[in-house]
Amino acid sequence: MMNGPKQEQEKTEEMVSSIIGHIGVSIARLDFKAKRISQAANSPILLELNDRNTRNLFLKKRKEAGVLKMEKCGYSGKNSVYFNEYLTRAKQELFT
Figure 1 (spheres, helix red, strand yellow):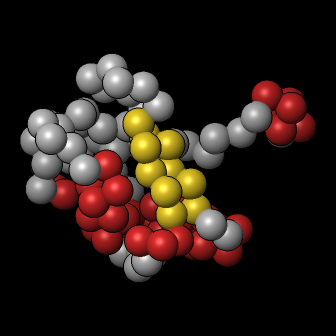
Figure 2: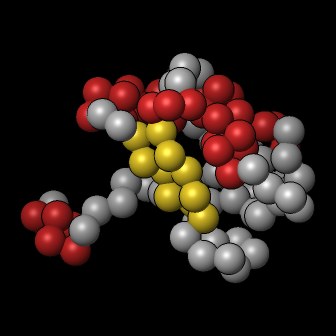
């Protein structure tokens, strides 16, 4: 899951692809799905990667990249971009 302000006439997968590129990971458009959880202005974006290795590489590179701002990626807003793993309640309990 990631945050980010909703853009006018937003193309969610293009925005996510651009942000992924700024992190330094090359992920083909066919290897992920991205959509807003709701129609609310600042609702989180659910990013679903097709395989575990891609997810692990992405999370590693994201951590190495440090703080990432929306404006650095070419989008309006000074918000930072955050990524969190989306876990079911049962899986969350395993890790707590």
